[in-house]
Each structure stands twice: as C-alpha cells, then as structure tokens.
Image (tube, rainbow over all chains, first blue to last red; front, side, top):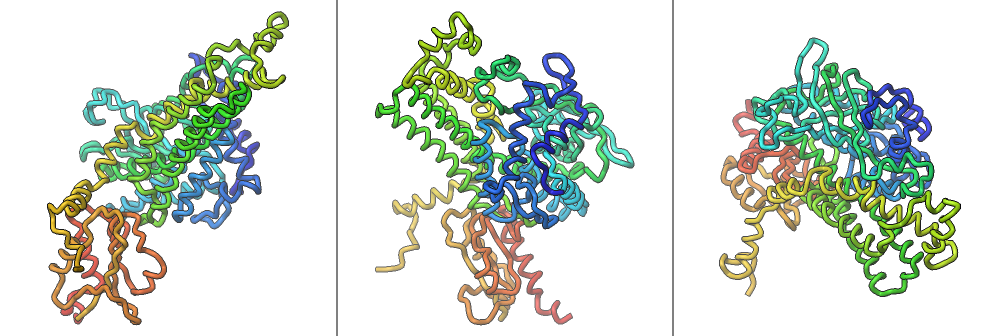
Length: 490
Length: 108
C-alpha cells in the first residue's frame, strides 16, 4: 500500500503515543486538540490531494526505488521536471491550506541525505547509502510523514558545538553500543513534528575534525522513548479554543512549531546514516538548506495567492475595487508573488544530477529565491493591511456579532458594499489578520525570514557562489582595460 | 595520436574559466593525447563535457552518443562529484588517464 488516504493518515496519528506538553500540561489526545488539529488538517491535505484525479499528476509519481506509485512528498527527484513539479505542488498546497502544510522538510531531507550518503560511502567505504535507501523504501511504501530535523538549540552562537559549555546545545552521540547509538540534545522550530511518523535528524552546521560526536544523521520514530515535545505558542493561538471559529480567520488549517527534546534516545545502526564524518556535514547542511530554500518559492507563493485573494475580496466588500490605486496595489502583490514563484522555478529548471542519480536544485538560484522570500511576503502583507483598512485591528469579536443586544448594531455598522457584506468583511478581515499578524504570520512572515536559514545565511552562500572576478573581467574587456580577444574581425 | 572529443557548453554564466582549465589540461597531458572539438561520423572513445556550472546542461542524449565514455565537468564537479577549485585540472587529468592509460601500461 503505497498511498494513504487522508483519513488513514489521521487515524495513524491516533495510534502514536507522543509525550507532548502545552501550556505547562501534558496533552493526552493531541489529534483532537483544537489548537493542534488545524495543523494536522494541513498535513492531511497532502494525502487528500494525492487521492484526487485532478491533482494526482502533481501529487503522485513513480518511485525510483520501488517502481510503485507514491506521494511526491516521499520522492527522490529524478529530473529537473521533478524539481519544477515539486514547487508547483507546494504552491497548490499553500493555496489549499493558506498555511505551512509541514511535509516539505522531510522531502528536502530525503533528497539531501540520499546524495550525501552516496558520497560519504564513496570516500569512506561506509554503508550509509544502502541503509538510507532501505529506510526511504519503508517510508515510501507506508506513505509516512517525516520531519526533517536540523536546527539545534545552539547555546552561545559565538561558539562551535565542541566549544559549548553544555555539549547538549547541539544534538550529539553520547553513547555507542553494539546495537546502535544514543543521542541527546534538542531541535528547535520543528514544524509538523508531532504530525509526522518519523524524524530524520541531521547536523546543524559545518563541523571541525574533532567534533565527530555532533556529525550524526539518523532516523527515529516520533514515538521513540526519550523524546519530549513542547508545543510552541503562536500569536492569537487561544482563539482556536473559542466556540465561534470566525475570529481564527483560517478556520480549518494552521501550522505549528515544536521544541523537540531528545533525552538519551536510542537509534539502531540500520537507521544511522552518518556517524562522525565531519567532512560531510557542510555538504548535508547546504544541500538540505538549498532544497528547502527552493521549497519557499512554492509554499509561500501559494499562501501569497490566498492573501492576494483576501485582499481582492475585502476591497470588493468595501466597495473600493474601482479605485486605480487599489487595482495597482493588487497588481504589485501579484508581481511580488510571481517573482518568488519565478525564483522557485528557475532554481529547479537549472538543477543538476548528483553522483547518486537524484537531482539537486541550482544552489545559487535557490539562495536568491529564499533571500527574496525573506522580504516580499512582508511587502505583500503590508499592502494587504493597507487595502484592508483599520477594521483589521479594531473590529469587535465574533461573540459581539452574535450578541442579542449589540449584534444587530455591530452588523449594521460593519456593513460595506452589499447587504451581506458585514459577515463577509468579518471573515475575510480575520483571514488577513491571521496571515499577517496572527497564527498564520508565523509561517507566512517569520518563517519566511528565518526558516531554511536567516537572510544572512543566504548572503554568505551568494557571496561564495558568485564569481565576481568573472564579472570584473567582463567589465574590463568592455572598457578596454583588458584586450578584447573575442573580436577577430576587421 | 589518441584523440579525446572536447565539447563546451554555451558558457552563459560559468563558475569556472573553461578555456583556462582546458589549456592547463592540455599542458599536462601525455604528448600522444590531443583534445579535438570537431565531431566526425566516428564515435569517439572518450569525450569531455566542459560545462561552466553545475547545471551541466551539456549532459544530454545528443551529446552522449558522440563518445563511448565521458568525463563530465560541471563547474566545480567532475562526474557529478564536487572537487576543490584548485584541484579541478588534476581531477580531469586523472579521469583522462583512467580512460586512456599511458601507452606502455596498456601494453602490459
């Protein structure tokens, strides 16, 4: 069975026994928790669309490992077409959920670990690649959701893992046994973690030769003993606990982030894909980051589509849609959003084959993509707030709309263009609020800033990947500082 | 004289100086090996795809059929494995000699 239905996916989560804390209390039934459920719904959409004939061309693909039909989220990219389709799939999911749907990070980790383990084995004679293929085959055949897990707690940012006063600041191997290893540490910002079946752990950064215990890549089930999850707060999160859901804005979907503590977690050798090969930590981190920076050229664009749609709706409901400056602002939102998509498509089209056979994005263009993602969603959100007007932040609560004494008056004075515009304005303003400053802003704005690496991380990569001297030579030839040997005609 | 087919990509945005690298390779090759860019009806024994960046856009079917074996250079990658910039020439020469061993070794 290579494809799960959305219902089978949700049911599979019910069987997991996870050690989750929220608001200082242990969560017993996390699947039905009103704060968590929207994020499960978002992940479930990655399964639902794969069932639909009108979306299966993007959502499913033939496995390079088994030849079976699988969900693209578990796929190893076999061509630049695959890379482009990945971005298109992510845009589609962003449109359907209006939030982070959380499954990309696993797909990006698969592709990075696949090619890196191949190259580790070629140099060191290890057997990580075969182990990883076996693990990924299991993932594909059971259509599992996997959390690609990289960002450590990192303690004092001026110090490397080996220099930290607390070695647990970066997840590391604390014991090697005959049957496997034991790891300890903490991974932050884990989007979708508790909605996943498996965790694929990777090192956080470049490592020195003597920092072997931190050079670890391995897979563990989310319910492995010793793992503790502490749910992250989001702006306006407790609105999800209120009986009337209108004030949530995005009624059914949402993202999540979880602090994940690995308190001496055992990993059998067959699930260890790197153990001490510090010379490959940079490659793994850069490849994972590159794929994930490409991802943002799809998922954020999809969410951007929903925000543009919300902006169009509110100007219609306000009766402002004919004003020329309003039309121009909507055009600007589209221009920015499609520019991000162009970057995602470009770094895919210029992708390349790796030695292992799967395809990797163009690293420079993926970093350009993500650099733009750190900026454009903020501008798109600013314009959306401009078009929304002040009611975005002053509108009464849903309970006031329903109150028998003031409700009628609230609706009367919230009415815009059209008799039914009060509730429409209420709903769409809450959606804009959600995406630009509420729960949805976590993914659309701050995650755009810091997810897959903060802006400076991309600038470091751009500086490394662009050959400035080549460009200097071009200029010097044009202005005569260098002889232009290209000209051989009279 | 043993010949190696040399194909360049279009060179739109190279990460490496392709001509310079090839000039260095030529200088280091045994005297009985030459690099030729002109294709003939005959399928070459060995070819070098000289792509300026990792996209390696030369690696396509119509090029592949021009030689039996290929050394694929894509920016700082040789046969899709990353190589340090200052070791690129050395890696290409090693690959050439692996495909076309020095004449006396071939006799042994």
